[in-house]
Length: 95
Image 1 (cartoon, one colour):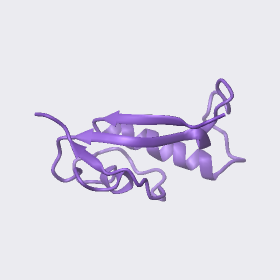
Image 2: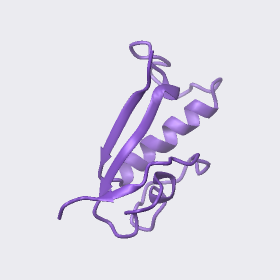
Image 3: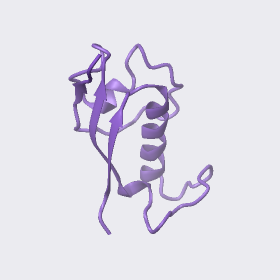
Image 4: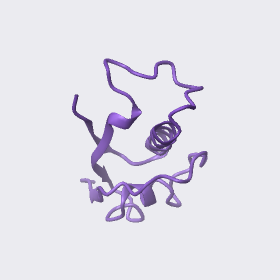
């Protein structure tokens, strides 16, 4: 099976939590506490790949996603700060 390629519109609190959670469960394969299902339709957290992101915040646009999710305007609690480099850079959305 291939990857699930995800595009994000709005890199805020919800996405910051999602990205940290996916990274946590991908790196800690034996720790599945908190997941309702380890696999869904044959896909796991390791199959999710973020490929694009759009935001209007100047402090997030042009940065890699792993930096943008920890910017000053994102107030999600950091529960897994060791998010690998998400190579996709933010693009400016229309305002």
